[in-house]
Length: 575
Image (cartoon, rainbow, N blue to C red; front, side, top):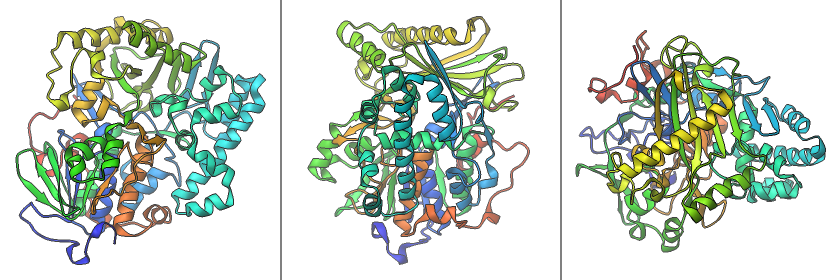
């Protein structure tokens, strides 16, 4: 059994609250999935979360008792019959507790807009191919070359995910598998696409926070394949997905403790033995799964060279992060007419890469930031129309997202909240935040028309906000850009016996689907069984009869606090 877990340790019943079979640090989707499956197998699991509610980037927040904003759940792919997330939920017996509302999979779930083209992206690779060729008639053969390659790589990746050995995949299709180790930029070069063609094919870069030369081709096509299997939004918002995993965890004997920060991972003789909390208390387990930021896990929680080989520590210390993100949350006292049930990916240039480089060059050379070259729109009040939480009837709720230059200096501060920097009232920080917010609203009005006079709530989250809530290095929700060689990322197993990692930094990719897959991989290695293939085949772990009933006033945000804090003060409500 992986991780050195001895059979007699399984199901330990040390009820002093200090001894468990497994401890999970952080409660993002990856951590919750892994924890849920370990609990369903009979292990006593403790999940520790420093924030008030579980969910990581999948959590929501509420304002004015009227509006609920999703932090990172903008859409989910492959949620139809036989889909990835339904299978993961089914394996824990909670599939019926999350309903997925389809976006416009026929007309287009993503609308790409540049100065000279609009492409509505539908479900299905062949329909996607046809829309691209319609927008790029002079490059039809190049589009065919790219899509053929993408479909082949996506198919090989799916086979690997279902358990087919990599050596067999390389033996059967060596040319295809070589592209799993190359960048998207190199694939676009190989297919001879123009700057406009490259932009249209890579327009949804906000799903992973990198330009084509900074993202693996396989990661790009796997994310596209995920959505091209159908795009959906969870009814009731992203917190409903989180709450379902929390219900499974707690029903199968696990425990969630929120408002509980981990100071360090305890390692003795090269193996994990538990964690030390910020209040000085130690909690023990032979398995520790870190859903915390990977760099912070290695360098801070585990003490760097004290626990890991020097070359891995050096590689981790030198790692660069993917794009930092600014998000503006907007509520209006009116509905936005004529919007499709789709995200909008707006670009102010037909050459996305040149525009991005120009913004960074001007800032680094002259200190000037006065242009938003790309903007992503997510309309929760369209995707979850009629939801009592998202906004009152007749109102709108949407989110605007863009990248920004990296580093704390851009925001006028020397460090971040993880370092104890008191940034929130810093005049330079507030000035930059207002400046960026106005630029983003200006760009949004180029697409939506005038909306400022109808705003009832506007709020901006910066990379420092992200760092504060999820302790992400660089304030990015996307994880590392480089970790040694291009495209390389850690696996879920580490050099420390009994220590595993999940989240946006591991090799299974970005987004809810990627981190959920990483959570399944952790549980599979620990349990010694191919869980993903099993749940696709109908296996259900645990006993769904133990799940709690849901009452009419059921609140996913309350559930996501964990049972021990259900009655704690300070929970925002709607209505």
